[in-house]
Image (cartoon, rainbow, N blue to C red):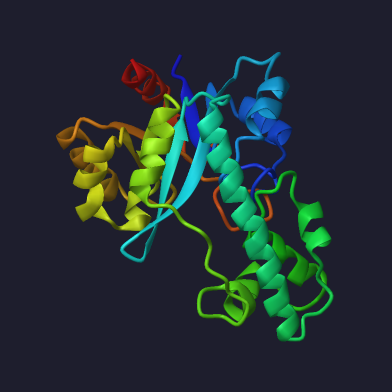
Length: 273
């Protein structure tokens, strides 16, 4: 019997509406063999997901998605199979989350300057299950309080780049992110390269220790997948993929919309060796 995995899923420990238990129950319902919890800058959702999956035939592997910037472009690096107890790794993640908190406070002040004066930091914090706060939490409050009709309008009117309440976030370089994941004995993967569009930088990422490419992704055409399969083969990289699911009330894909053969998980495990 064929086995499949979804290796890019977020929980409400970052910017998804899914609780870790929700992820596990849905993955089990649709028959997945493996999921990876890949929250932004936090790994706090991994153990709750593993606890929820204890009595299931579902493997939950540790993951994380790190925000980076290079040459003015947003680049995300996924980490897998790292040591979740690695001290240096956890210290850096804590720093990233602290900058997220400070960013949210600055955005709230900018919103007040625009007349949006009924959103507090405590309200934003209450929406998240950790301190990995982000603009989606603010967007939800803008909707709840009647300032905008939906998330798209929240970003277009207030929160998006070049909008009145925009505050840039702290970003490390992708090379730093790769090093951080590798020193924690993990696998570093370039997330959704078809969106990031930094193909010319992939060789330098490989030199820095990049292990893989996320080539199976929502709305990626067969031609695009084949293109990145060729790059992966050229540089001897593993290939991964996933739904990048963020919850039922978002315009993202759902858990299992992208399923990769379990062989992708096996290839990552071999890479670790």
